[in-house]
Image (tube, rainbow over all chains, first blue to last red):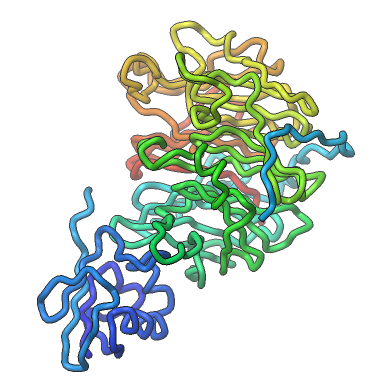
Length: 85
Length: 400
């Protein structure tokens, strides 16, 4: 499925939109980390929770649980939320 | 799990060590500047008069510490995070020409299901391990944790019992109990005579010593004052800002604390407040603590205004370092070249350091993004960089 990433992650992917697979958001992030080592830990912490200023949208709906299931046709967007100056 | 002991350990007097020798003239000083929005490397000429600026590295990333491995003279580690992304470590093995991210940055253990686990917000402090432990490093984090890498900073694991020990966790307090940017584990010190002998500072939580390579730590806080009205036997209220060991006498440590300047000469177990000789209108509160590479009686501090709401600025807007040449009995003001008034910056705990030259060069980075140095042990200060972001840490290394 297509995954749109925010600019802070460009140092990993070089492009904003990438392809990744996974039956859940957690699996999708694991696939992204396989393709772009180090990316997952920048957006998900060691307790498997989303970092405070990262927001995840599936088909334009915000999700908060990385066990959220996904279908191959879903679109996923990671957004950088406001984090100060 | 190894048990923590409250009993103060004793340590036999070790062999004497050579003080840091004056570096060969062919070598150069490299100043490593970590800021709120990136890192800079300043390469000095032989006389430390002309500085070539290399940077920014990691523009926009929060760099809390940038350290050169003195064991190989070319490996750099940078502790980084951004406003949005989680913390990581970047590594360079060619003095900053190229960087590679750590495969496994410092992270707390995953908590069991149903238990709230801790999350590393940022790595705050980096210390190369003993000279006999090549490629090994320690890291201190916020919230407080101690980590170790044995592969040059590529992969990190929680180290010793501190991270999960209930007693230590109670001393660390909650994230609301720490400094404004979060509670920190810092001042990780390795005895050059013995890799098993370690010290560390916890803000808050006190100073601790290990004699068994980190398997256990014991408090070393006797003699330290705490904020008025609190019980000094409660380690949670102790706040060491910066602890330094003297290279020429590793039995002597100096400390800039939230409640004064202190010295201890091991095997003594009690700190002596040596800041009483500071001018009354300046006081003995600040963050950095710098020791001379070859003279254990000489140390420098950079006091700040700790009155009322703790402005954390230079007292009266007049910045100055202070030096003792007699182990803290007396102090002299060192402000030649620094602004005479209306300078409301200060210096964070990692942002003042010394090189090993003769005379010693001093370096300090300000909260307003200026880098100052002195080629004569503080007698006169010169600005060597300005308009940088807020400076978090400054290290001086020898290269070439």
